[in-house]
Image (tube, rainbow, N blue to C red; front, side, top):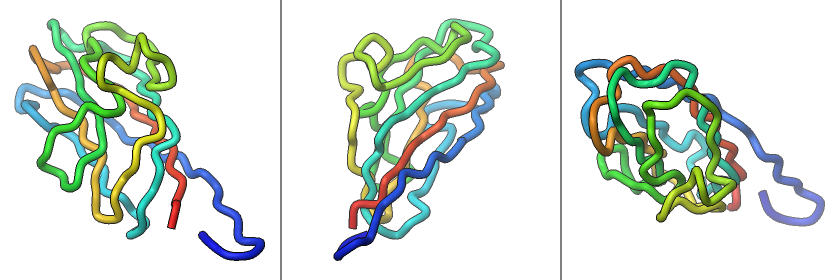
Length: 132
């Protein structure tokens, strides 16, 4: 939103996650619903049921729904239940950062990076702010 007096308000979306035996590579995506560039203010992952075996997740913004990205959360173990955020470097990993841009036609992608996410149940909360 632009112009005199216009205000932009952040909006949080919840994206349900469920790992199955068919889950490989990118197993969940979220398309930018606004048709305008957004800023991802934060990404918070609540894993309520851990994966049955060792596995890691990458979560990030991408130009489409088929390109992997780890610019929000990089290499997070899905074999541990709990709450994780890209707001601290321990959870965000090497490449995970705060305040990432999400293109007008872009997606947030959740990828099984290593191992197997069978049995994983959780919710990714993504807070977006429309920037133009």
